[in-house]
Amino acid sequence: MISVIIPALNEASTVKEVVLLALNANNVTEVIVVDDKSMDDTVINAKNAGAKIITSTKLGKGASMLDGILVAQNECIVFLDADITTYQSNVIELLTVPILNDTADFTKSFFERQAGRVTELVAKPLLALLNPDFPSFKQPLSGMIAGKKSFFVQCKFEEGYGVDIGLLIDMYHLGARIKEVNIGKIENRLQQLEQLGKMSREVAKTIIQKSAGVINQNLEIFENIQVVREQMEFAIRDSLLTLKKMAIFDMDNTILRGSFIQQAAIQCDFKENLVEIVTNNNNPFVRTKMIAQLLKGKRLDELIQIVDQIKITPNLSLIIQQLKENGYIVGIISDSYDCITNHLKNKYEFDFSIANELEFSRSIATGEVRIPSFFINHSKSNCKHELCKLNSLEVLCEKYQIDIKNTLYVGDGENDICCIRNAGIGISFCSTNYLVDTVADFSIKEPDFAYLGPIIA
Image (tube, rainbow, N blue to C red; front, side):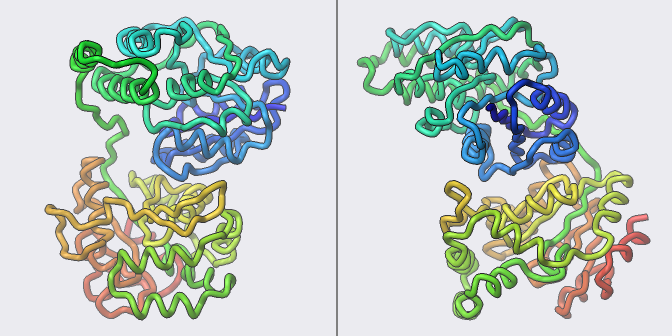
């Protein structure tokens, strides 16, 4: 039986077709779309097509691939790109027959294509220079691959564009039987020149790192490498759709009629520990790290079950729909954890979520947490707090070229004050904090999002 994994980032227009292709293939028992925190309709389109959805624990294709492997139920695994709609109908069969017949442990696709500039100018020359005995592959950077889970879990999944060449090199060093498979003609989007510069750097870095100790690398070799990289050096640009308006919701006591961590404290019996941490630690970094330790050993499904038991504010789906119809991108900014906010994002069709990144190993919380840099005070911050949601809001405004005056922010607590005060429309929602009500443009005291309707109309 076969598991198909489709890493996806903002591929709303194509992901459904790829999912349906996979579901219709022989021997496929599960299709997993690993969402890299998309800001479009990728998740809802993949879900509607019948895929199982998980959110990557870390940004980047490599992390998404590894997350997919860890939850996959089958030994035979196929990876497909989410942005290609010209696969042959039997592409999965072509990739997996050698695996299922046990004549290969790993298959690497090659195909007809419009161009392969990084392959020809960077990957192949570097492999030849640094690994003279390495087998020749037609398209070493191809992302359409298949293999045995038992081999994949032994590989290191590089971040960024280096992941595909890194897997090929790792499989070779593991002694895997590797076979190239012709999957016909593929028409995919050509990378912009700006993106090719970043791609070439990351591919080169991966090959160099994985070639350490293979041969004596001399200065002339690295000078040749630098020439190639300089020729393709451009700054990468964001290609996401620019939107004009943005609506942001807090999670605890706003979207939810309660607090996730408080509910977890009750159900997991660490209420006293939580109170002690909150009352005795004024430093927000230390407090955040210590609270995360209380979740060590908890499975992801246990945490999701906890949040699903908390009531949702009525008419949440209705107000999200109304906001989108009025041209808003709609998201969550929370002091909680991304595994929880992403669950709500996927469930209620928010466009994105931002929160602290709880670390997992094989779907079990390690007790470690990473505070995203966009929460942290910097030289251009408009407030003096060490951590502030306003920094995230400003980063999003810059990213999408949205004037902060065209944002709407809904929150209830002290940590929301800066955003409520600086947003174009700041809404205090069922707050018990006098200062929150004071800085808000509107104050809603009934726990029902229907009261937002007249404000956004």
